[in-house]
Image (tube, rainbow, N blue to C red):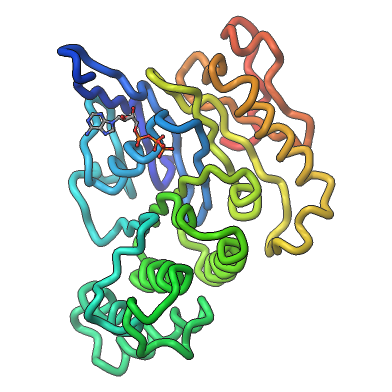
Length: 298
Ligand SMILES: Nc1ncnc2c1ncn2[C@@H]1O[C@H](COP(=O)(O)OP(=O)(O)OP(=O)(O)O)[C@@H](O)[C@H]1O
């Protein structure tokens, strides 16, 4: 059987509960990502999304389980995995451009100055910030800073990009504009992205698949929802596709009605569902007694 680009097998994370006992935040997390996929993960607050992302980034260690990327075990942070957090971590004393050239130079030390600059400017342009390249972070709005963070992360071309609610701190209008920038930069680069969001519309706009987590403690990735909408996508028109509404209704129903009871397949893999094609788990699946939903996305 051919292996996927990223294989996550049986991850769990246990923390002290502060009362002398233990808290299993999530357990037996299993999934795989293919090269070039954009996957969002959604779940209620506290189910462990950021902890999973930090484990993927090598910033935290799982209590149990294995993580293999491109055939190699993931251990500690590496330039192969780029991370963007909610609060743009730019170097305040460097301009927007220099924040990017600094990272690009570290990634490709043999590149000439001109090569580094040309490459960095190209990515700043992709997020519409070429006019502000010489401004320092303090001279940029929150949205512009986050666009620099995104450009920097994509410019270093990590094998896996990890985005932890990158638009969480932004107002709705700015958020929308940057979602469009992210669509554009991903369409051009087709990098593999794993992103946390609480926003179902954002997840549908961006993702090939959406992982749905059950509530913690002992949270699991219960389902993997295929987003069967053609690329390129645009915020202004995506809602005109009837499939969009089927997927959206499915996600909202999960979060409101099913997240406390939903379970993955018996083998621990998320149930593969495709709401737009009518492939959804039967009501009995949550009790793990019925046959699994027809797999639509391995
Ligand atoms: N260092 C730590 N020590 C103890 N408990 C922790 C630690 N880090 C996280 N937790 C607990 O793990 C659980 C999951 O946290 P995490 O931040 O991963 O959740 P999340 O799903 O990303 O939440 P949110 O959507 O609110 O950001 C929480 O109950 C949190 O209190």
